[in-house]
Length: 241
Image (cartoon, rainbow, N blue to C red; front, side):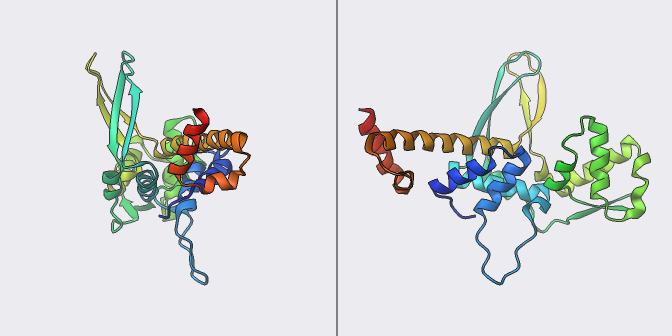
């Protein structure tokens, strides 16, 4: 991954702030990938990466730009108590195994691992069971398995479990126990949305800093963004004083 400068961050935010949350995560990864040398064939599109590989890249980006310690909170579904959590993004990234198989076989049928493109295809489906069925249909490799329309819930569950074992980082589940009512629950960490919220916060802070310095000194946006963070912060302190 390559580091983005402040101008890159603003361009990233401006490009992605109206996109679907799935696309924002992919945009952040693409913007931070090393440039492909001329004449070399680029890797497959990020949208076609298995979800675990995508999440590893997002965890690496989070570490690079905001540090490894990701902190957040959720509310207990029973009593509403605030439940805090902390995740080490370095540990997340290390759990992805590049050598693992990209396909699974269940009851004579072969499936590839789900990708962001597959999630986009079912994003508008409100029925969880139908969404799971459509996902399996999208991921079917051998079309002899097109009996998907009559698969039982247990068969769909079996395929889902095998996919989870093959790509454990595809879904980042966090366990909680409420200290007030002792209710236990599990929630999925939406890493693309979490990272984008931090990117947006940083971009808007940069815009406020640009506004303050441009208003006081008449400097161009490019000149302000070219400053080091320490120099810009010092000028802001003088403006605020």
